[in-house]
Length: 158
Image (cartoon, rainbow, N blue to C red; front, side, top):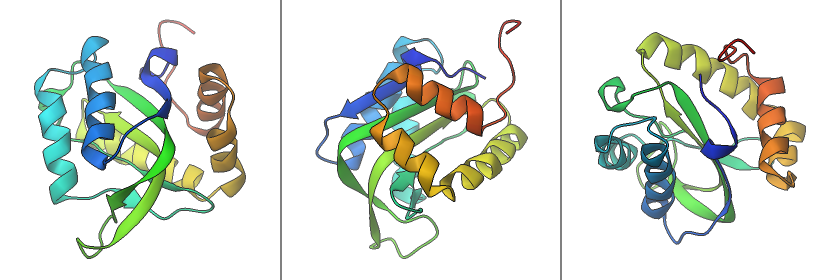
C-alpha cells in the first residue's frame, strides 16, 4: 500500500468537489499509481455515490472507484485550504457536508478496500487525530499520523 509524501497534498485550493477530485487524481496519474481513466471514473462515481462524512470535529470524504483503473494500491490524502461541499454518503443527494480532508482510495481488490474503510471509520471517530491532520505542519507529519492510525502493510521491506 503506497502512502508517502508524493500522495499527500496540503492546502489544496479548489472551488468545487470536481476540482478537488481532479487535482488529487491527476497527481496519482503522474505518480503512475492509477490509469488516466481513474480521473473521470472517480469524478463520475462521486456524483452517483457521494462519500462525504460529517465526522467528529471535521468532515471528510473517501472517494474511490473500480479496481480496473488502479495500477498500484495507494491512498492519497488531500487537505483543503477551505472546506468544499461534498454530497453526504448514503444520504439524500441534496444533503451536503463541508469537507476539509479527502482520503482518495486506489485499491486493487474490493476486499482490501473494505478492510481499509473499516480502519478509516475508526480514525474518523477520533476527533483529536482528525484535528491533528487538519493542523499538521508538513506532509511528513500527516504520513506519521496516518501510519500510526492505520495498519497499512509495510512496503519494500520497511
